[in-house]
Length: 277
Picture 1 (cartoon, rainbow, N blue to C red):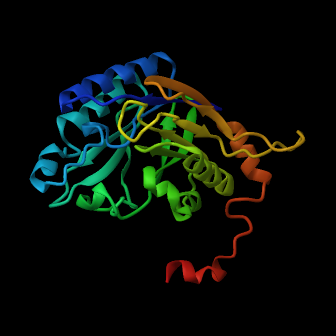
Picture 2: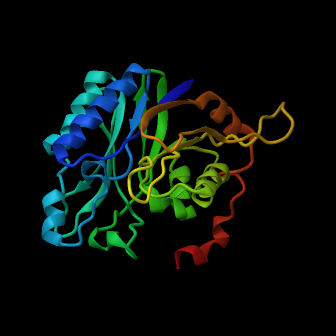
């Protein structure tokens, strides 16, 4: 079972309508490429623009039932392709940095808001999310257990570990920052230690503080009958804008998880009390 994941590594527009139209065209291109899942970079609705004035910020925010978000739900159904759309979500006084995944029939699978907001920087104006979620995504190829984390969530081992413990096989990770060697190494480590795949979609070069390099780590560090280790990074986009697609060999990952030692098999949670104190 191989899933094709499309990375919509796009430069943002200047209005919500422009974001929708550019995102729609990218989704249509992804579907034409045979993608099972199309993933946007972080907070696509406004191109990760975070004014510090709360009135301006809230004016930019969109509700989950807005025409913008629901337009991508309808598009997922029309294209028979899962779509992971990201947006600045209306939420009381402080909005959320949110992600919604719709399956190929337009059904909501996951609605996640960034838990580890960058409260030391511009995201101090946002509310943090409250939970990590895993759900079954139905695709034309079969079902896959999906989780989500957003950008800075990557820096905390607990994010991917909780998703693994909840059964995730694939984590979708929208992003908006420079993907340099250390952040890429963090993604590689999250995939390795949890024996799961991580697909990250970033903004391209030309977006301030971003540089492309969307990636797919498949979580398979070695194969039983082959010597040595293998590169878990099965796809890395260039810095330029584009719609890129990569295949995830889910069958190979599942076989690997059956007989290898990482993940949950030899943990000692009774020794980890300090982590939650």
